[in-house]
Image (cartoon, rainbow, N blue to C red; front, top):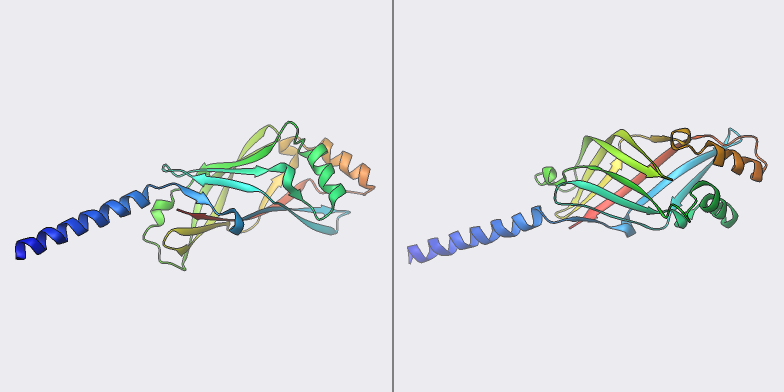
Length: 197
C-alpha cells in the first residue's frame, strides 16, 4: 500500500515536472489586443501629437529572441491625410511593409517572479525601419500579470533620432506640405507589450 502511494506520488511529480518544463520552453505570443506601440511628434516647437499602429504581432521564442512586426500601413495619426503622407513619404510602405523590433530577453528568468510584481532589466533592442537597423540600449520593466502572462514596458522614455534612419528629407517634405515652421526630428517612442503562453 505504501509502495503504491509512493509510486503514485513519484508519477504525479514527474508529470507535473514535465508539464512545467513544456510550459517553460513554450513560445511566448504577443497579445496584440492588450499591447500598443506609439510615438510622438512635435510641430512648430510646441504642438505635440500621439500616433500609434493598429496592427502589431510577434513572439519571444524558446531562446528568448524577441521578434515584433509593426504593420506600417496601419499608422494612425487621427487624421487620414496625415496617415497617407506618413505611409507614402516617411514609411514608403510599398517598399517597407513593416518595421521590426528585435532583441533578446529571457522571460523564463522570471518564472519565480510573484504575480503582480515588476522587475527592471537591461536589454538591447534593435529597430529596423525603412531599411535601416539600429540597436538601442534600454531599460525595460517586466511585470508578471498572471502565471503565463507578462507585460513589458520601457523604464522611462525612449527617443528615436530620425536622422539616424535617414528620414530628415522625408520630414522636411512633410513640413512643407503641412505648411509648418518645424517638425522635430527626435521622436519619443513608447510601448506596452503583453505576452502569453
